[in-house]
Image (cartoon, rainbow, N blue to C red; front, side):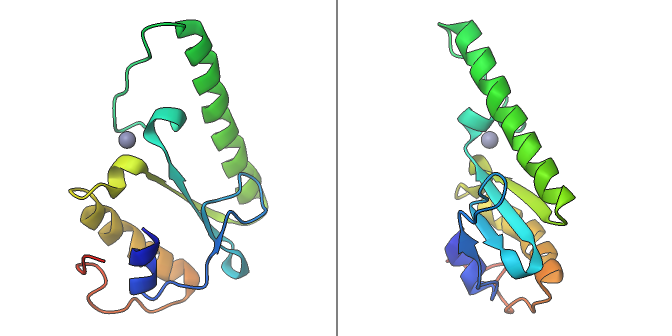
Length: 125
Ligand SMILES: [Zn+2]
């Protein structure tokens, strides 16, 4: 993921920046944040995950709390004028990452006022 960002010319980011939710990748100067969410813990909407079979109540509460915290972080960041992006783990797997980046990089480049390095959308980094 970060190799892709660098290859695309979108460097200058900070990791775990100290704003709500501690985004995995952040460009503080431009107030652009990117979360990379684990599908299991953050309840990926794409993966159609089932609940663990035992301690169901525990997991329901736990997941609900995670999702709620994610939403609060996003809301808090947006209230501070940040643009927030979420990428799911499954979207970074070999088969999916090209499509994910093709969608994400131009948006980020725009928000960051940067030119995408040509070929960045196809380079396997
Ligand atoms: Zn997923």
